[in-house]
Amino acid sequence: METKNNLKAWLYLAPMLILMIVFTFYPLFNAFIISFYKDYLPLANDGAGSITGYTFANYSVILKNQLFWQSIKNTFVLALVSVPVSILISLFIAVALKSIPKLKGFFQTIFFLPYVTNGIAVGMAFAVMFHRDYGLFNLVLSWFKISPIDWIGGTASWWAQMGALMIFTIWESLAFKILVFTSGLQNIDKQYYDAAKIDHATKWTIFKRITVPLLSPLILYISITSMIGALKAYNSVIGLFGEKLGGQPYSMITIVAFVYKYRSDFSFQGFYSYAASAAIILFIITLIFSLIQTTVSKKRIHY
Amino acid sequence: MAEVFVKNEKSYKVQKIISNVLTFSFLGAIAIVVLVPFYWMILTSLKSSTMIESIPPILFLKPSQWQIWNYKALFEIVESGPRAGQPLFPFFTYMKNTIVISIITTIGTSITTILAAFAFARLNFKGRDIVFAIIIATMMIPGEIFILTNFLTINKLGWYDIMNQSYSDAIFAMTLPFMTSVFYTFYLRQTFKQIPNELYYAAKVDGTTDFKYLLKVMIPVAMPTIITIIILNSMGAWSAYIWPAMVTTKDQFRLVSNGLRGAFTDSGSGRTDYGQQMASAALVTAPLLVVFFVFRKQIMRGVSRSGIKG
Image 1 (spheres, rainbow over the protein chains, first blue to last red):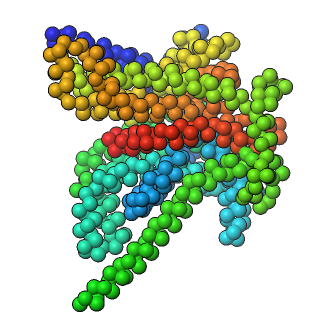
Image 2 (image 1 turned 135 degrees about the vertical axis):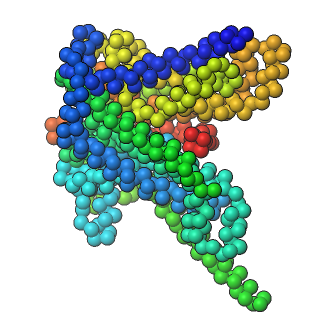
Image 3 (image 1 turned 90 degrees about the vertical axis):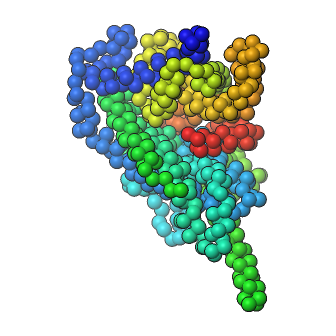
């Protein structure tokens, strides 16, 4: 009976497990192996691939590659600024929504729109809005007597391009966070707020002393998952800058874009392994963030 | 004493009005910021090229000034180049591909996740918790790491034939790796677990098989969750960009996102036709918004649960 039950359970799991073994577990393992291949040509010998041995050199090659460091810099600056800013804005919005129960649904629906749209289509709309001569952003700046900025064009500075990418990334990522924080706020006991009202606490004190501490497990969880998400930025760069990946070629390259660039050059000896090494480095970085999450969330949850 | 109280009450009311005004202006401003890109997309798509290039930019257009020419141009047949004989923006081809991919992956994902979630939620077997933990852990891994090998696997299966890829090859290549989802399995397992055990034991006593119980009791009870999964999963195909571009060799096999970027920029002069570009972006965005407004509740509920329980 016991073994029969075991077998049956595995039959139910089989479709998912087989797909995951082929398309998740094996590729994870294989990516490590590819990153140690020497002179790898993945499609040679009728798709069997060819190598001349094993090496650690792929990692040292990309660690000496200027484009790789550019991608690390871009990815981290983008993630470290856009994640905290979008969390703060969406917390304020969620708190504001709580105080207007009647129109909450209406505003929530509007704020959720960016989540359901095609990132590339909207990214292209942002690109038009960031146009130096006929864009909306420079028009608004001109109302404040600020001279036009080249945000995403060929003469754009690194900061201007990064600013544009950050604005777009924050705009895109607010939707999910507002929704999650709003439902998180609903679960906070009303008693805390009633008590604060009796004490005539100011809104800022309530926000600082009640809302943030009680939401802290959720804020931490969202910070880490959005950090991991932001480290994988790619579609937003394509949407805003196109395949050129920047105002100047590759100026806004991200780690994922670096992986894809070398992957697409698979007919050059060893390039596929560079892509694999960069992917493994990204994997290790995200692993570190996940570990931080598990340790921190065990240590300090404010209740 | 009473006077002081009345005074306080009054100032409290004034304070409340001020704070309400501030709240509404803040939320209103954010709402404008959220909506402006959509507005700019549609506005630009309705402008002629001289209107687009006017400085300062035109912020409003009367309906009589609308140019539908940009939309018409998308469907005009191109005479030369890689898209010869096809419309300038083969929207309906991309749309058809996207819908086909979305239906196939959604059916596949529903079947594999329902079966797996049932096993994890209801059946007792050796190693269940370990297998579940390992599967959940894969959610943390960036998908980019899988793509490198998956591309080679698709090639080995013969579906990436540079010279001679057939439509069915392309469909297999685009769908097979996405026929399951760890996240939806997790989400569905939570719902399945809420169904009382007594129901299961009662059915067992009546001699109902596990599969029949899943079909007749668990799936109907968990239908709202399953519908949410179906909607969210179907929408995924609209934003798929890199994988379809990677495993298809012909433009006519690709999905909506692939067609958008790169089109409408003249490779010689580097000039972009923003009007046509925004018209195509609006065409791609519109079906998603329609789906969203029809299934607003299910979508928002599904996404908010994913954040809370993830």
